[in-house]
Every structure is written in structure tokens, then in C-alpha cells.
Length: 175
Length: 438
Image 1 (cartoon, helix red, strand yellow):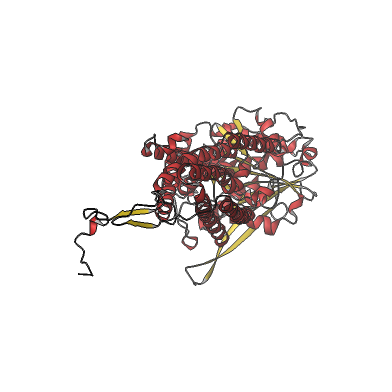
Image 2: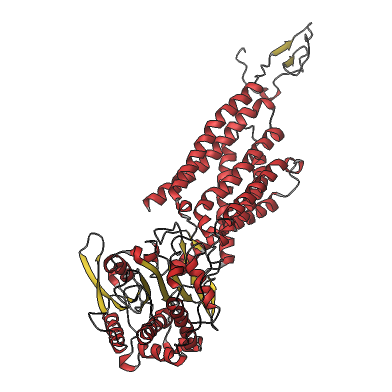
């Protein structure tokens, strides 16, 4: 994992791969949403559009949230926010790819779609985020700081996903 | 890290196995022959007659409109011609719906009609074969639906003409069965499956007696998609198996159609293109359904209602009469088979029940529960880490060596200021500050 710590890969290359992984993971949901727009006659979309838009929206939201959190962590985490944001991309990429692989099940078992969209991504992201927290502690902080690092990262993660879950639930109920 | 990856892969494999092992339909006991009662030219002629020509052209069959009403009259007359007797086995079901014009506006009523022909009436069990006959040629302002200018030849004059020929064949050939066949021509379908909704709620006494509903929707093209449910079903398998005997390709609907994250059918937490149609009203009541529809169901723009006239339709689908004849034969052969009732007994039971997977709200609540539990776990983990690696604040002491003194012990933990010499200014950045003691 030294290549992450030492930033041996250009951050823009990592970001592009991350965006592609979001495209793969969000492809299935996005093509359905675009099919709805196509049916309603707004525009004729296709699978390429679905991949690109899933990548841009998923990756864009990720970058926005992590930039915000990295800046917010400046005081608490000794200005290591930028390094940690760089590292987080490496952990989201495999999580997205594994979620995307699992989502191919939709093609054969479409009834998995409702639960899959709720759990598949969260499940893999949770696993890789735990690994990410372990990595961050070891790579960027002293042992005495492990507690506050885990608290900050863990609570941030749970707040973001909790917020998304509550919004999705409420929007579903209200709709 | 490696352990986590291996664990993830094992979990994926387990989920795949679980999903794969749950959808096998085991029963396969259905064989029929070829009816050969449908002739290509008759089917094409029926379509031409329904579409009409000159002043009698039925281009505008817009839901709730006068054109739709005239089309219903035409269908009714045709069925009378084929031997169905009005008020005995041929009825028109009046369909009424209410809409509110604008916010807080007046409630207005819209009227449409279903034309219903019954073959072999009075039996306990029923099979429904349906097709919608309306289109969206003009605007329906009260329901906010814009007209497409489509004459609705593909969608769904083809289904209507096929259904007329089916009704005719049943009446003329009188296949012996122990169930009733109801042929329904649905009105107001394009405005939100209103006709089929009213048929299910008002006309059918007990949906549990309905063995099967077959929907004919846009039956032209070299491929006809067969959609039955989200999982393999006996009825779907029956139609696919029988469909192998015709020159038209009957195929299970592609697995690669988009799944739309929006609820259309009550029993389904998303929308599947195969679900769009009048059969959805039956599907919601757990009636086994088979939807037969043409077109490229893999694509995004399948259901965009493109303008289609009779001429453009014939140019695009020159073999439409053959396809319609094959579709009619498929339905006729399946329903007139001797062992249909035996096979139908398993339609409702021999199917994987996936309703558990449709609990979207439940899943979100579970997810929020997991997040709360994770937060509760996080607290003792952090406490454990703080206990194991306690934070020791480094208190740096300021030690000053003045004239005649030496530092007691020079370590990194303290700050040392040496003012033994005049040029050893401990605060070089503040030379210009005002000295308060001067």
C-alpha cells in the first residue's frame, strides 16, 4: 500500500478510473432512469449515455462530498485531508466494481433490483471503508490518534449514508 | 486485505447460488399441434378493414373520443357478423372515469367502452384474451396527454385484428373446453389502462377463477416477445414451447431491457417494459398473464409511440399477416389443447414467490437500522482505541539559559532559548515590536 501513501499514481488518473467505476456500478440504475425519459419522449438515450451519466453523477457527488470532508477535517486530522481523499479513491474503485459485478444479476433475476440498489453498494463500500480506515491510521497517524481518526471517518461515513437512506425512504414514501 | 477480498467473493458466490437455485420451473407437461385455422390473407384483410380507408378510416381512435366510440361500434358489428349475439355473449361495458381539471377545478367525467365477447360462457373457470383498440392520435386535454398523430397500426390495430380473428375462429370451430374464453377489446388503454382496470374491477366476479390472461399488444415483426413474469412460469414456458412450431420467432423477453426505478405495477417495486400493457391490471391481482408483443424490446425507445400510418407500417413489416396468423395460432392452439386445464392448475402454484424482494421501504428501514448499529459499534471501538493508545499531550517547557548558566538536559520535548549572548535573539521575527519596558 506504499504506492498510495507515496502518491505514486497521478491523482487525475486515479480520479478517471474512479469515475469509470462509478459508471459501471451506477449503469443499471441509470439506464432505467434514462429509459423512462426516453419513453416520455424527452430524448432518446442509450447505454453509452447511461454509463457516462452514471460516471459523472456518481463520481461528481463523491468528489464533492470528499472535498468538503477533507477541508472540514483540516484541524482535527493534522491537515492530512488531501492525502486521505487521494487514498479513499483507491478503496472506492474495487467497491464499485464488485457492486457492479453483483448487479449483473439483475439481468437474470430482475426482482433483485430493489434490494440490490439499496444493499449491494453499501455492503461493498462498508467493507472497503473499514479497510480504508485501517490504512489511514497506519499510514498517516500516530497510534495515539487512532481513536479520533476512526471516530471522524466512521461518523462521517455513517452520516453521509444515513442521510442518503433517510432521503430515499422519505422520497419513496412521499412519492 | 486479502482475507476481506476472499470473504467478499465467497459472499457473492453464495448470493448467486441462492438466486439461481430459486427460479426453476419444474413442470413441463404440455403438448399441442398446429391448428392451421388462421390464414395470412385473412389476418391482413382484418387489419385493413379495421384501419379502414377514405372517409371510413379509423385513424383517430383517441381514448375517450368519438373516434374510439366508432371503432368500438365497428368491433361490435364485426363480432356480431362472426356469430356473437348482442346481450347474450356480446356486450359493451361502459367505462367511466373522473378527472379534475386543473388545481381545485371541477371534476369532469370521461367515457370509454370495452367490447366483450364470450365463448363457452357459464363455466366456472375463465381465460381472458385481450387487446386495446384505442390510440393517442389527438390530445386528451383533461388527462394532460398530448396527441402523437400516430394512427396506432402497430400499437394496436394489429392486436385488435388478431383478436377479432381469434374470436371468429373459436366461434366457427367450437373447440370443446371446460372453461369460458372472454375476448376483451379494451378502450382507454393509452390513457392509463383505464378500460382493463374497469374490466377487472367491475366485470369479473372473481379473479381467482381466471386461469390466464393473454394480452396482444403490437403483434408484428419477425420476433414476438413473450413476457409472463419476473421469473420463469409454466404459462410462459407453455407459450414458448408451442411457439417453436411457427415460423415467427417467439422468444422470452430479453434479459437486457432497462429496469425502470419507478413503480408501475403494484406488485412490483420497479417498472419492467414487459409489464407495460393492459395485462398489468391482472398481474396486480395475481392472475397468471402472458403478454405477446413485437418490437425491439432490448432498446430504450421501444415504447416511444412513433407515428405509424398503415402505409409506413406495411413498408416496415411486409409479413405482418403471417406474424398475426402465427400469434393467433399460438393462442388458439394453447387454449384449445386437451391438457390445458391440467397445465393451468399449476400456473399459480409453480412459481417462485419473489414478493419478499419487493419490500423497498422495509429494506431502507433495515439499512437505517444497520447504520444505527454501526454507529453504536463505532463508539466502543473508538473507546477501545483511546484506551489502548492513550493520548499523551506533550507539555513543552520553556527553558532559558542566561549568563553563567547551562541547560540542565537538552531534549526535544522542551523549548530552549539561549540569551547568554546578545546576538542570540530568541524572537528574531519580532525585532521591530515595541518594547513595553522602554
